[in-house]
Image (tube, rainbow, N blue to C red; front, side):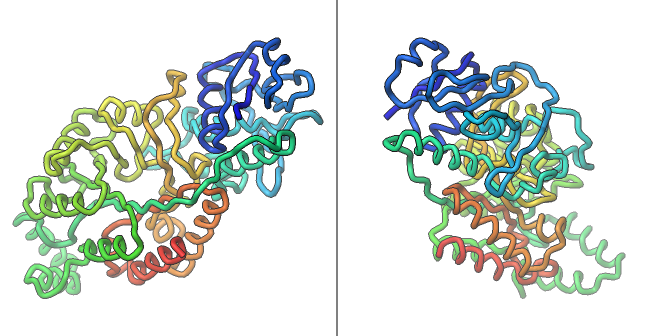
Length: 436
């Protein structure tokens, strides 16, 4: 059964947002119209969205956001709503929700606030604490999903025969391969440099470990790939590996893509799972460098690459996504914060990137992740037990709305050495919790 939705003006923002909320999240077919006579004559389920109600049809009062074309500094008022917060309050007894659920969803998912002037961190990244969600204690809630479910309940109260799809929880493990090995396969100069660095620092433990690994007497501490394959088989996972292939630099320290051992590892990963590019720190917003890295990895795998996640999670909207589109990347997994756990776009689902600069929807699919190992260990200073509890809380949030939980970890973390002692066990427990 299809619903007719009346809006004062059909804009790209309106089409995008209603498609996301009604069709993608709720599975509800709908048609948009700005013809009031056609709307009034319709006997099928219908809803009005705009400044005022039309007849007796269900009505959601609107603010102006979806009818604008430019990027303006919005008034971000909040309202308490069913144990969460709503954005853009509207008033009147007739409105379905006490806030404009469509404008609020668009504001979060489009990352509207990231286009506005903000103080950024030392890597040029938009900061979690600058978001409306963080300011209102809602960063760890998939608000867009929660709001959509609340809207569904209200529509069902009016039209009991409306058909909505049942949402199913999904889990996607992702692995960033920033450095495939700690000591092995690094070439003569980098190996000697490492020895001299440890020697100058008087770090006997590192010297001994490096020497033992290079002699083949113990496994490299970053070599957790067999463990990953074991987990993949045991829990029937469908992981994605994002591989850093940039030239060696201060913040890019993986093995050269020309190294045979590294090429062999990449092919092995590609045999087991999907592989995406992990554009280097130094290729940030540099189209030629990114293209070279994609071409290098594609050549090793003998297939085109369509998935990406930025190294250091460096992202500038809209330029980062515009460049990915130019490079024929169809799916990006960067959407998340390094400093905080939660839902950067307020949603636990894949969505299309809406380019606010050009006021248009694109064909780039954004896959937001909810949690990263380094966030818990390095930014929040959580121990293993507290990290597991936080991860479980986020999984519960996503399961409650039938969304997709994406987790980001590294091969170094799953090696379980030094600062990552206990983390492989934590990850296994998390997988058991997710798949139980």
